[in-house]
Length: 272
Ligand code: NAI
Image (cartoon, rainbow, N blue to C red; front, side, top):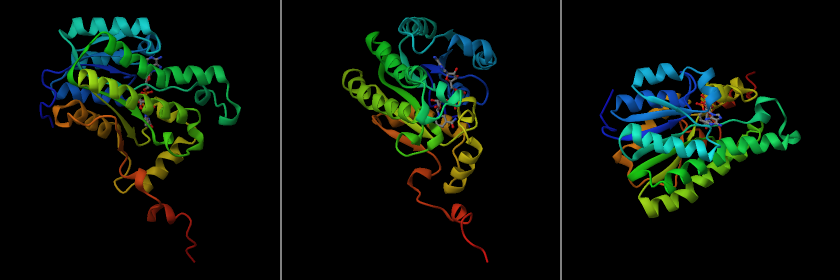
């Protein structure tokens, strides 16, 4: 269902790789709500993924940009304003990658060059995106910037590996930069802490099937889907949430406030 919540708004959406991507679903929903946007991803992901199909569906242009490159980001922001015909109202940072996770390196045996690369891609890129927008004065007043995170930033999920630190860093950047963006440009900055979701990045985490089944049983409303995340993001891009900022917002079916559920307990109860 469409409510025209983003009519006339312009944005940049990072991180749509394939139809499972949270950014992909968000792009479809933003389009339905009347927003226009530029799609961007790392050049290699554009070659490997299916972003052309999404661009066609949503009438969007694609600008390749490695989110760790300040030059790429500068060009992306300049070109986006040209293509869209004005300043930006919304930005989705939906980027995450750990080489230690991808190559099966245990948390206690990290390759620190990979750790650093993962931090640059997954967390510092958010600072770089915002600094580029801020310096170019590219955001409209009452604009909204959202990044996606996971609860391993607050609690221990052993197989989430070095992504736990990356998410903690990302959430902190949202607060710190959100202060300056709010004070100087009236732009809000938030992170959405999403349930485990079957995507390329998500499924790369060791033991993901157990992870997702456990959190499904633990959450009174069940896991939030990628589409649920897209819908929540739409509200944060809309004018209905103008003074929500510096927040880490859980979209997780209630998981984050649970201690234990009956469904999980059943697995441990002796039924004799
Ligand atoms: P995805 O694999 O579809 O998206 C990750 C994106 O990051 C890809 O499009 C990839 O090309 C992009 N990326 C990687 N390196 C890049 C670079 N150097 N420059 C620009 N883009 C780059 O997976 P998903 O799940 O949609 O991930 C989106 C966000 O959601 C990530 O921040 C992820 O950590 C977060 N998240 C995912 C959860 C899950 O279980 N899938 C749970 C909570 C948060």
